[in-house]
Amino acid sequence: MTTKKPNKSYIVDDTWNRYVDEARLNVECPKNLREYLEEQEKFIKELMPKLPSDVRDDHKFGLERYLGWINSASIRGDDDQVIVYLYRYQRNVDRAISDYHQSIANPFRQRQSEKSKKAHEKRWGDKELRLHIEELISKLAKLEDYGERYKTRDLWPLFYSALDDYGLDPDDTSGEVIKDADRMTWTGDDKGISYKTFENKITKARGK
Image 1 (cartoon, rainbow, N blue to C red):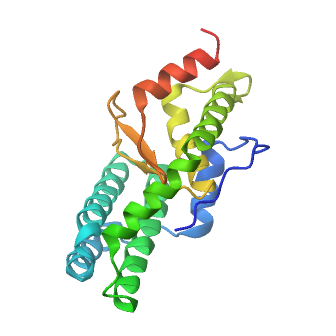
Image 2 (image 1 turned 180 degrees about the vertical axis):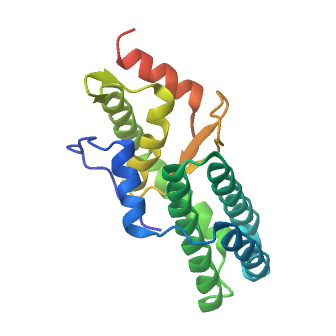
């Protein structure tokens, strides 16, 4: 994957509603959601054995996690959350299928050595990328909705959205309830940032 470096002039003007609108433009909620979830569970079971062993567990965990979140949001009657999780789920399905196709096209590639090489190359940009991430968090801290600042927990999904816009393929370990230890990682930084650290940075950027 080619990492798209963030533009320094990037201005965060996204909101949760905008992200929901984006999701609705790209996916449609199935008429029978329960039937859809059951079909996807079968699909995952069929797809997993076909994936390269070094990415199989990550894809399985990510896809099953999103199916669980879709179901939970549906039970709560949170239509916006359902469509967002569906959008993220289908994006992850696309990535899994892409890995499958790549493994067929080049079954003898040295995946681990490629990973090591990419990790080494990305270290060059870690410092610069981190600076952009810090700028992004500072801009998120200043976002307002009708004159009121967003709660930090509401900024977490916007942080994900912005990283996704950068082309950094973010991964969020949080569930329905965000915990301090939950973590956001992205391409080029496997450690990422915990929610607690994110919260502290938001508070600092707001001058509290």
